[in-house]
Image 1 (cartoon, rainbow, N blue to C red):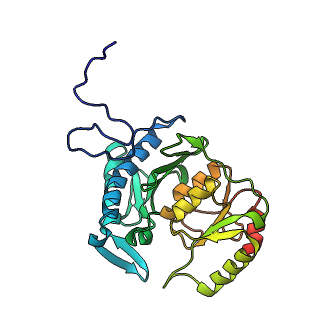
Image 2 (image 1 turned 90 degrees about the horizontal axis):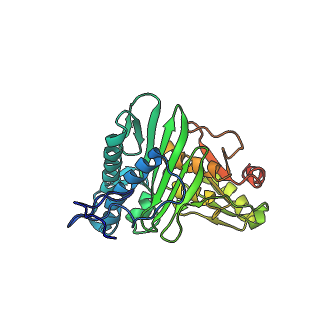
Image 3 (image 1 turned 60 degrees about the horizontal axis):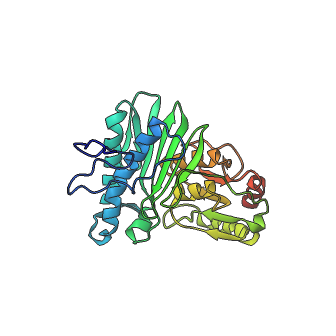
Length: 298
């Protein structure tokens, strides 16, 4: 049977119609095995579009314009352009929504819906040529995060979740695999991720005391420098727990939903309820390790 020819290819999630000279805006087409809402589809299209410029700029790091927002806190042209792309893509389909981004500040919207975005989580890694960074995008509705996407352009791993529908990962080798936090119960067998304060940020002596305790009671500690991916890794069971101090809403909004939808818990380091925008610390674990980690970090 011969199908009728099309005037042009059909656009799919993550890539536009391919015409001569046009690059793909995301990874090769992978049909999702899990149902995606229109909202998740819009979010994935936006992060794939932003990832296109990040991948290009990552290969030209030495030519990027970089400025310092504060001691040890950098922003590059790549961050700014990626956020502009996210805004533009999201405004095309949801023009009434608000937007909170790390680089461009906040735009008020309809008062109910707000995108929360970190266009380049792991900027220091990016600027040093370390291929561990991500785009994090969440949708907050009436003060509650209801959808999240975290995309690692270099490994081509797409983490996504919706409130009540679970959390999933798409990779070049696996499609829409459901995420589950680990089942480890003993801290001595747990791999814990953290964020270590750098120059000009955080209470170093207090942090080092907590880190020393964690080192002595767990199987290992990792610090990879991208909070959104740390949370996604907890959701995927790669890490058993993650703790950090002083993270902003755009660092954690997508990841905290992902952990919860994967069966995990998100609290403050002291064990209290985590509140986006007001809590000064975060602890993400599976249910079995939460109390033990709170005690270790006390």
